[in-house]
Length: 220
Image 1 (cartoon, rainbow, N blue to C red):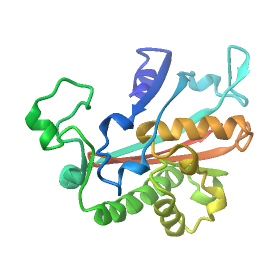
Image 2 (tube, one colour):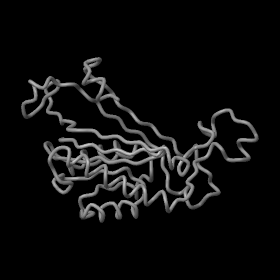
Image 3 (cartoon, rainbow, N blue to C red):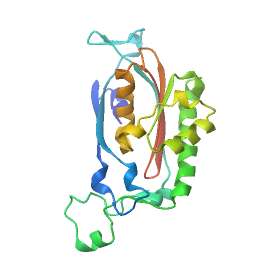
Image 4 (cartoon, rainbow, N blue to C red):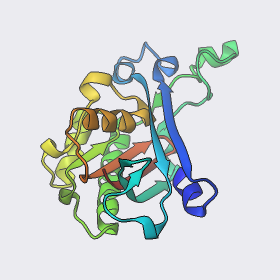
């Protein structure tokens, strides 16, 4: 959404933020899923550049900056019921006794194995789409930073992409699955510890409820 506002000239700068408090939506009696999640937040600043200004290196307020090369987003509601929050909101939202009894305000993963298969396929497709659109292969990127769903799933994604796990940036073992905040958190960590340096190509790929998925190629 921010990219489109910038391309249309509506705004020149946008702050994109994601905050997730997954602990408010969990069914702690469901030991298969409740242990997977975490709480956290991340943010990024985007700035529009005139194509004529795109000379390496790009600079904003005197500092070198990266570039979004492309973004690709998809959705398919056919299997949306496999991962959802039926009642919306969270357990801190005013709710009825009936909704509490039915656990409508807790996250549900139905047909988990089927969801994993779909997620692996879509993760890989999103990464390949972002690379191919820019005339590259996935292996040309220094890193693939995926949504941190779970390590086993991401190993399957890497295998499908014929990519060594050493090129897949992981934070799941430290922070858990923080839903939409996982990629900005992982990206920030990789930059801070200098795993990502100026000019590196990075593929971001995500999958989530809806079902929705997408990928992006950035040059840091």
